[in-house]
Length: 170
Image (cartoon, rainbow, N blue to C red; front, top):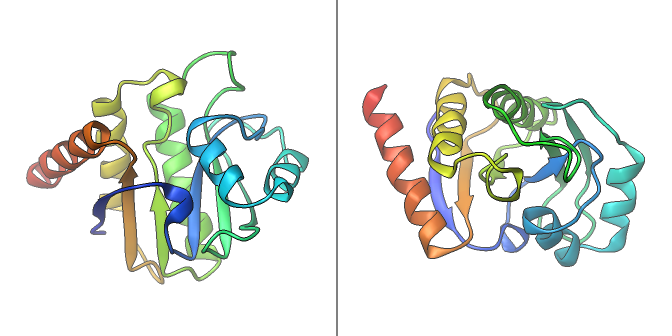
């Protein structure tokens, strides 16, 4: 499946599903989770934490609570904050789970960040390559608009370059 690389604040994106880079507790702290929580309402955090904890690599789905989306897919690519780092398998499973959760709900559009990277401790280039491979191999039904998002100029440029490399290798 093809995807686009975009830059910006995930909480400002319009899509049927937005993916939260979550820890297994589903508590919405900083980074992507913090941006989504600030863009929605505290109800988003309350609903998410009520569904946790979940297994590493698993996903939970909530309402988007005022974000320009129908759903937030909380993808646990990392353990609870401070309890370890993301792994290749947790990033793969969380990415696959996010795509499958959106597909199960008939979503046509999804925005996904660099799961497991940043505060989760996984190398950005390696993490993005894993995510891009998983998206590329996903057999989409309803999903037609998948966007891999980076917040800063540097993060966006790294994601774009790695995505191009992954596409060239396939």
